[in-house]
Amino acid sequence: MSQATPESIALVEDFVNTLDLEDGSDVIDSPRALRAWIQRRMGLRARTLDEDGWNEVIRVREALREVIESHSTEPLDHRVVRTLNRAGAAARVGIRWDDDGAASFTPGDAGAGVVLGPMFAAVVTAQADGTWERLKICPADDCRAAFYDHSKNQSGKWCTMRVCGNRAKTRTYRERH
Image: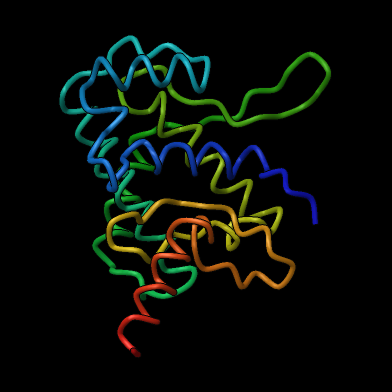
């Protein structure tokens, strides 16, 4: 299996990982920082993204983390689904056809929809191409990073075996001895 992460999954992975629990940093810790991330990562401009829109994006980021976590361990809380449904309705994702007849999802141009529209489109694409279930959350409480499981049988558990996996194995070994 190729080690390349599909683009739709990479976008969602990058979005969820804007919050780094290990070092306590958040790349999108304000509306201004979120606008900069959208421009840098997605090449889009968020003209009307305000504090309320930013708060909605943060709620969706954490809801997506919970959905992804449900791929391997946790059952999905219905409040998470309600959060995503509300945000999905507000995102106003549309279909745009180019001159060659190719269709693509496009976001509404207002507020949080600029980031959430493409994010939800990426999820739908990943579900359609069968890669969505490979996106997982590291079970380490101090990490919880999203990662793409490249293993052949989809048995990957840790974001990196070198860091989180090694810590868990060392902890288990010490507890046994």
